[in-house]
Image (cartoon, rainbow, N blue to C red; front, side, top):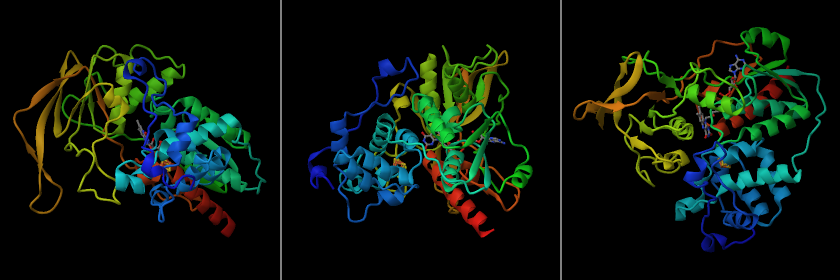
Length: 448
Ligand SMILES: Cc1cc2nc3c(=O)[nH]c(=O)nc-3n(C[C@H](O)[C@H](O)[C@H](O)COP(=O)(O)OP(=O)(O)OC[C@H]3O[C@@H](n4cnc5c(N)ncnc54)[C@H](O)[C@@H]3O)c2cc1C
Ligand code: SF4
């Protein structure tokens, strides 16, 4: 530990976002960076606690105190070496991880100001690419072949681990480029897609083969052609809202807009009929989570007239929630960079009906509700409050999560990971799951 008292004297300092008036006119990353001195000073706040919980909270088991220590002493290469032992893609998690480790940080629990682990992680990863610490490895081949279906964070992590173990890895991806939701879900203002391209170039140079535009329809056939198959196909089915008026024009699943916008930024063109745009429109986002927030930021950049986000659940408390005590994840009010850009947020709102005119949506009839404890002890009961109202909207985006995929019984050499196994989750969990499956495959093949 570089400075044992830094946590007493150095306050938490976040790099913060670019100013709203500047950032809403482009899709560049909103988060800024600290200078080297400040970044190292932030790392010095990590106090090498007797029992650091951040290890445990991070699904990858990242050794935050160890790399923070190297970082605060200016040993950036050492910090990267420690980080890459547990995290194959710190440049992704460093940008978009909700930082489960920070909510487990002893400083968070004592002062409310966790060490800036996520930002430190991103800085270490970026420094590593800049200074050439990210080297190309050429593992010895063991003569066995593995197919990976899906190139989201889970598939990429499995592919990278298996490649390092000596397997010949082929990734099959139905989209035109790699990344899964990193590329076709998460907006560029949170994750610049060149960051994915840069990593894929390294993986290709290390010997992994990528086939794009190939949707695998027969896992059984693949399992006969390869020693093992990784199924990392994510959660393809979004939750829909089948209420009256659903067939009106102007109602879309969130990913229809988000993935199209990312493709436009990658140079793809869409016809007027295909285009899902918020330009000049009153936008209603149904769903109060992160996907909904990404829709808000995208709508702003497309030039919407207004954005409203509604959520059926109650507004979470600010700062601390006694119902989700440590070590549970604190369910507290989250205000993202997109919310800061302007948005009406409402909770306890149920959606009744889409209202249309000439086949197009013009509003959504909603009902304010309350949640009452269930006397039978089950799920709380929904009770109506007041009269229904209509929210004006000519673009409605459904951001209500994804259905957990159901899988048939596969051959014994097929291993499912990431969101495909768990249901919709987080990038860090998908990476951890991909790594775990790679180990299981290695054990399975060695046993055989
Ligand atoms: C809008 C949005 C924003 C998000 N923001 C965040 C965030 O900020 N932080 C965070 O931690 N998490 C975020 N998430 C969640 C995160 O993106 C996912 O948990 C993660 O990407 C799951 O990784 P995965 O590899 O399991 O699946 P995916 O990323 O979904 O990748 C699955 C891949 O499999 C491919 N595929 C599917 N079927 C086939 C087939 N038959 N043949 C070939 N290829 C196939 C798909 O094309 C896709 O590329 C967000 C999710 C969404 C939707
Ligand atoms: S991956 Fe996420 S939880 Fe793990 S150390 Fe990084 S920011 Fe923290």
